[in-house]
Image (spheres, rainbow, N blue to C red):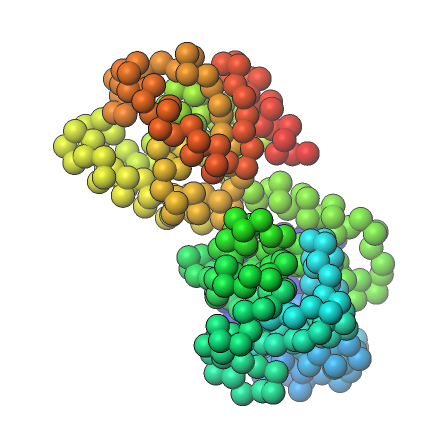
Length: 414
């Protein structure tokens, strides 16, 4: 390959898509087993590569030149082959610095706690130190170095941390339920940065946002470091707005549009209109549930009860919706009643509550919880606050599907 990214497990990498948006060379993703890394680096079958987990330190002995910043950090994520000589750089420093600045966080005089001790943690440590942090600690399950502490020690001595930076893979797909630490144990916490970019909103970030804190996953960092990597790859300078431009395009491609609201609020009709306009796949959660249960939902309700149905609904949210990107999703009326469903829908999605007035909602026999006017009213009164609380945007519906779809598209693509 001429250009690409190497690592041990790269199934969920976005790097190829990012580089394709930045330039026109053929960028490939190459998984390399640990026992094969040495032979690959000796053969040097590339013009330039990015290096990711777990090889940011392992490639260093193979380099003929290491940029001062990368040498100081002792982690390399960009390697350029110049006439057979390998030059190493750290563009993660620029990427993470940009992500921190984007969230309005200041490290000067702060206590910074970094979760993890791998190559990205070294970058985070350098950024915090250069940024004038009062103290910088890295958390490890097996602390060995002078600046590392155990997770048990955190709970005893370091709950006064003000900035939290996660550099571990905990919370990454295919295990997004993971969270390296609960941010609520830090009463002085001012912000959270998570290097994980898949899912778009790791659990740690979602939890911090619930606390009202600035918090963001690593997609912006990934794009920003890629911009610097391309400049090294091609010995060029990209436009100042290249990072924002590619990030916005990638988010527009990856983020799911998730529609919530009462039965009869028009989620399916509106969702299909949005999907057609944006050129995206449309997924109706009720249809996916029917595929799993093999019968109409009303029949399943009657035979097994609501509790059993909600378990199937949760399975669909977790296993069919959550791992995918670029969808338009119409949820069932009760999908947001469970916190775990909201969590899975939010990992890669923005939730839009279609708020259609009660008097415009019609009962139908195929909706077990909304099959009469009385049932509709009861569900509306029970759920309205929940819809408002769990959505990212509330869209007031006038009952005209085209108008509602237009409002959502306008908000989503801005």
